[in-house]
Length: 271
Ligand code: ATR
Image (cartoon, rainbow, N blue to C red; front, side):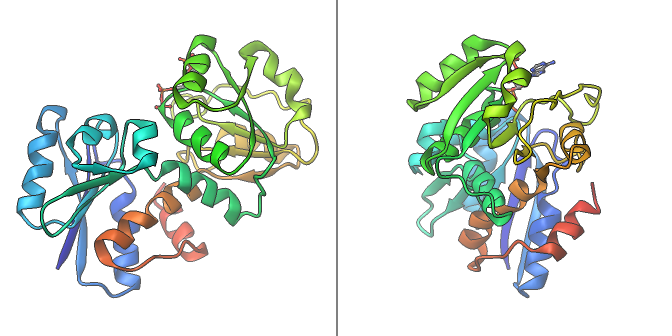
């Protein structure tokens, strides 16, 4: 059997095993995908142990994405830009390869919902690690990017580090500037389970504004709810989770899996 895993600390909240095992079943592949709780100080030896044990590769999640980058023998441009990886695969000679699929997964989830991104005027809320993947991928497909973050120096740092063209807006000003944008992306932790009390002000949204959140627990976040109440089109964060997983599955198990309604509902029913 072909074996892959997801490494995190903690790991019990990860939906990746559910989703990969759904695909293994759908494509009738003799394989397994298992969750592994790995302490940060054990990451390198666990990855090396997986290579020795014949694993095909793994995903890594919080807090391992940056450290796993340093465990790779070979990384691609996406990983270098992020200085982090979420997907690793092991070649037959033991070479550890890594990439970051979050950004591509995000873009794929929007294209799936027929949101066109070239020259799309995008407002990004947040400037953390998640914002980096999203901003890089959006910049690569020709979107026009504006970033706003509570701590504006972090937005500036992000633009410098990624070496992209992007505008900046003061955090206090974004609700009043919303009319200029085609797409609003929340990459902050506001609205996440336990932080659900934040009220997003969409008063000045253009009627054609598309609203998306990369958070997927709860499935309908406060931002998505506010957008739906105004009749705006929304794209849920679950799509990014499903699409970011595709490349790893293909590398480990040899099939490029599809994201469809059946899978979406299956994973959503566990949220
Ligand atoms: P991740 O890697 O998931 O992006 P992160 O790096 O901790 O996580 O980033 C969290 C983001 O949420 C940041 O943009 C943070 O803003 P700051 O840079 O100002 O900290 C944003 N965030 C978290 N709590 C917030 C709040 N109460 N109001 C506004 N922004 C908040």
